[in-house]
Amino acid sequence: MASRNPEPLPASPYPASSAALHRLSFSDLTGWQQDDHLAALHCFAVSARRMEHHPHSTKALGTDADELRNTGLKALEFLRSPSCDGETARKFFETEFVPMRAGDAPLSGFVTGYFEPEVEASLVRTDRFSWPLLRRPDDLVDLDRDPHEKNVAEALPKHLRFARKAGDRLVEYWDRGEIESGALADRGLELAWIESPVDAFFIHIQGSARLSLPGGKVLRVSYAGKSGHAYTSIGKVLADEGILPRETITMQVLRQWLLDNREAGRELMRRNRSYIFFAETTADDHAVGAATGPVAAAGVALTPGRSLAVDHHLHSFSTPVWLSLAESVPGLGGSSQGRFQRLMIAQDTGSAIIGPSRGDIFTGSGHAAGEIAGIIRHKTDFIFLVPREKSGNVQHGYRSS
Image (cartoon, rainbow, N blue to C red; front, side):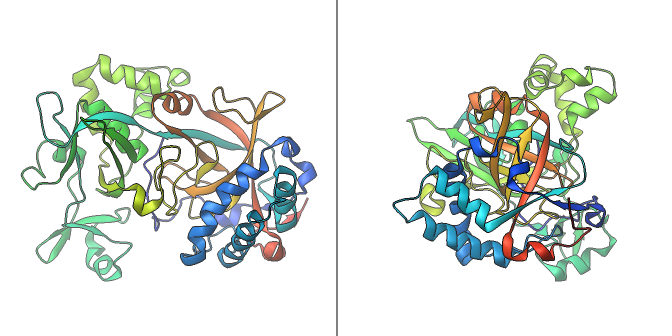
């Protein structure tokens, strides 16, 4: 689980130059023939419409963003054909892309799952709804997006990518504990109120939510900034301190522990100093419907079961990625011979998604999607598709296998 963060991000600690890339053929991809390639192509087309006017940047593992955009435009034209079906969609990917693996070994990648929580909420504080989700404050400075401010921030710790404007100075922003204790009170930042601090914490981790308001209205909120402090996995804290066995910790187990240990849970949650701010997302602005997910870091609405969060320092957004897990994912479908095997599209990122073969599968919205996301901790073959025209120019140790 990782908060959704729009680009740019601090540099990945993974050295891209150490990732030897191996060119494969589509016949090497177990389960490839059985996937629903038309569904994958429709997901890729969501990215293509965005890339047409808002091209991505090329990242370290060599998927050329301009060529990816051109291939996306071909996909949009291809989908207009009345003869486009699953078989022709498969041939489109095989014609336009070349599969690449980072590293030598199959099943050397790892995936988790994430989802969009759905909780009841109120636009005003009540006895029941007393825990706020906050808008982005006007004194929060994004150091990556403002080079001048970044120069001013030289005295701050190097890992910080957000800071607080305090007169002519930049200082560390308030962390989770300070904000929950009232550091931002009386500033009118409350976007909505929910019932539980545990629900709020998991909304922060997932980076978005669907809020059910009185009268049947739904308010969708998504990531708008963060305090800048490093993300701390409280599940790892519980395991490291011997409170829960590491192998038993799932999102469901962690949530129940927080509910059963309210005071200790509040203190534990504050050990994750990272605090997330939100903004309302409207369907009209982003063509987001009830069947699609929130607008994510690549600027598109996520598709349940097809959208993947990747390390955006290494992979260009909108890159197709073939996942072949070592086992099935109950409730998510897409299995062949008892394994989850599916073509995904890289449309999101996250602060805990680090490395060339690390991914996070978007499972959808609501409780059922959360149940699925909470159990995904699987080894996988992680193979990304490079536009064929540029595949011979991929750097960082490329060789045919």
